[in-house]
Length: 245
Image 1 (cartoon, rainbow, N blue to C red):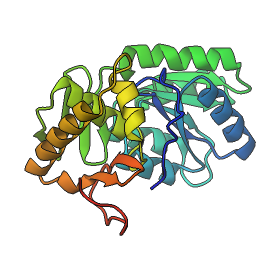
Image 2: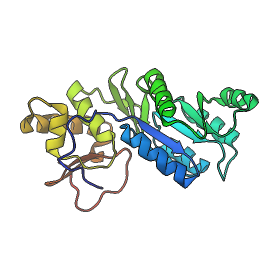
Image 3: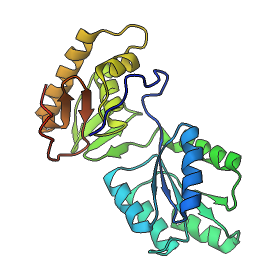
C-alpha cells in the first residue's frame, strides 16, 4: 500500500479516466503512456492479450486501446473476448488500412481505428470523443464494486450501498486508485475545496464504514495512523500495520 502526498493538486478531478493500453512494442507503449498521462489520463499498459483480458476482468477501464499484432493471441480473438467482457469503447491501433480488416474488427465489437504511425492529436481527439459518448454513462466495475455515475450509486457485490452524495464523493476518490493511501487533508480538499472540516470528514467516513460493514465490506476501508485512508477494491489480507478506524 503506497501513500499519496498531501501536496497533490487540489484541481485534480475526482475521477481520472482510466485507459487500458494493450501494445507489445515497448517503445510505442512508453510513448503512448507518456502522451496519455500528460493529457490527464490514468493508463494501465500491458504487453499481451492474455494480460489485457485478465486486467479487464479485475477492473474495467473507461476505454481500451488495442494493438492487433500481439505475440500471444490473434487480434480477432482479443477483440471478441474484450467485447464479451465489457461494452466500453475499443480503439484499434493498426498498421494496415485494409477495408476488409476494418469492417471485420467493427463486426467483432471494435469502435474505432487509429493508423500507425499515428498523429498524437488525432489519437487524443478520438479518445476524448469516445469518452464523451461512453465513458461517463456506463457503470464502472472496480473489483467487487460497481460505480454508476449516471445514477450516483455505488454497489458492492450487487448490494446498493445507498450512499449520501458526500459519502459517494469520498468513496469515488478512494476507488480512483484502489489500495492507495489518501491523506485526510487531501480528501478534505477534494471533497470540500472551499472549506474543509476534519470533524465532518470523520463523521462521513464513519457513516461510509457502517454502510460497507452492512454488506460485509467494512474491512476494505483501511485507516493507517498518521498516513490516511484507502479503500481496497476486493477482499484480501491486510498488512499488520493497518487497522480499522
